[in-house]
Image (cartoon, rainbow, N blue to C red; front, side):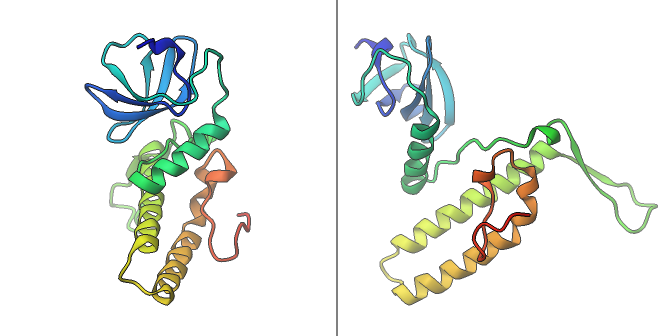
Length: 181
């Protein structure tokens, strides 16, 4: 197999990382979303890669932003794969300080990146929960709608954390649908 001409959407098997899909193409590397290991940049000549199904093979460099978003949405829908969500630049390297009312107690300091990761994981788990509810054969449509409304209210409760996200498209949106914080 000529691994240097694979395109976005090509499904691969890696002996260490398992199955994955090419979501980006660079000069010497592929950006691959692995089901069990997330997104990794792998050298095009890596001998551990094996093509499963060739799709969209091309020798040109391709832009990935729209394709990557679509592919991640599909992977999330079917596999619960979490995406990489960028933290706002002004927060990088920062810390969150929790100080109890009792000043004799030592404050708890948490790296913002760790807190942000937990927020993103919570969002991803809510999305997977939504998908599981929507695909559940035992729930009636009315039950699905009622649970979905509750999850939407959970998203609304989390809009306070939108200030941490670099891109507005990653924000939590509640019942009012897109009201900015």
